Length: 374
Image 1 (cartoon, helix red, strand yellow):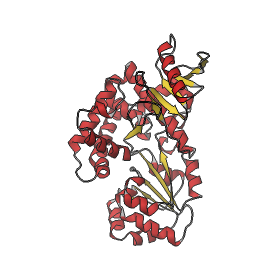
Image 2 (cartoon, one colour):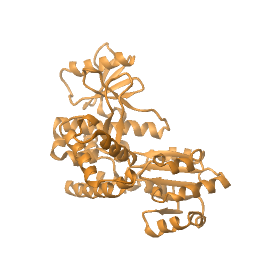
Image 3 (cartoon, rainbow, N blue to C red):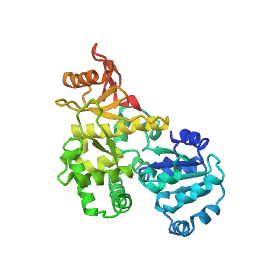
Image 4 (cartoon, helix red, strand yellow):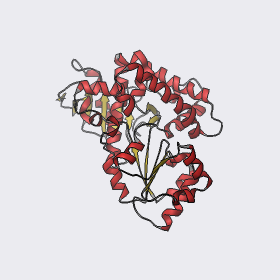
């Protein structure tokens, strides 16, 4: 069954459970967090605060609630009962045993001051990313890559064969995310209509092949920034900062390429749409791999004052995604070469829809397959 596929996050979660009394798993709504903890880690004492009775029970008396369950004990959507964090702190401070509690949520635990104060020094947290190409299919080639980037890595839509069913799924998913999750993340003063305006403007930028950044929004930049940060806290968007050696502002990527397909609609099959989908999917492949290795390396992009952006910088390595499988690549190669000079890098990558990699020049630039990080 698709939802019981092995996840690369399983091994690092087990490592964290040997070190920390509280193990946290966060990620996008319906990315597979509860399945991973309950079914793959086999934590049988499992409750979710999506359940009204469990949530009310925990709100009324969090310490009594925790005492009812044997250890290890897992709580899903834990952010819905903030009182539980102090109760967890109290239990851990009485007896610090690694792997006692597993908590998961669709919001960053660090987003709230109460959460930070309660769990600092007591929790090891991992982010679960959408299914990678290798998690989602046993056949790794360009065809499976294109199919995966169009459907995204959320387990349900990834394995829905019917496009109309995927559209209905994403419509419902977005409604729940915008009405419930984003409201909780933003807090007092949340304006649902304004949130939809922000999302629709992001969609418009993507349809035009643009990199979403704050100067392109039509509304007040300070207000838009607050909504983008709230979206980031629930993993609806990912912030991609410019490398310090560059001159650009923060870019914003959507949390899953399948959602991008939904937003782009018919534009997803154009050349700009294909590049945008590849950018989103490859980003999750890269950062997911680093996360599961427990490496906290920050991915950036690079932009000079005059040049086109280079999609990603990993350490000092510039990576640019292109749609050409053959022909002249002078302009793209020039952009990567310029970023290499600024970054002090001896290597650069152009990722293209090809099966075999090749060396482009003596400049240290290689053309690799879109599959390179998969």
